[in-house]
Length: 108
Image 1 (tube, rainbow, N blue to C red):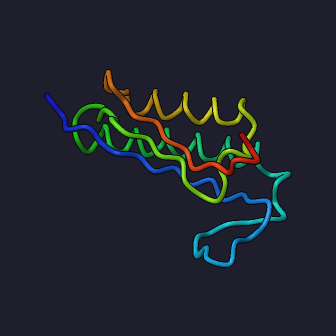
Image 2 (cartoon, rainbow, N blue to C red; image 1 turned 120 degrees about the vertical axis):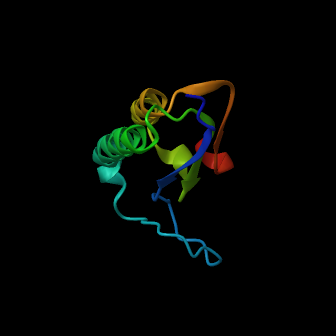
């Protein structure tokens, strides 16, 4: 079965400070929970992947993956790596997958 690729959005709600223009779900005082959040988000991605596979009769590939937030670039590389691994396992990447992350220049 040839399933159309999906675009994935993964929300990372951590920020150093709250910007006046931001209406997104963000937290400035919960940075110590980033690793646990990465684990929880990885589990959720795997669960959604299993559900999508059951609904569509096969794994849906992903051609775009966007990390939004918050400031995803605040996450530790190991935490982001776990999330990426879960996303790739649940939604196999197309050959030209585009992976994008919102970033603050001070955190990259």
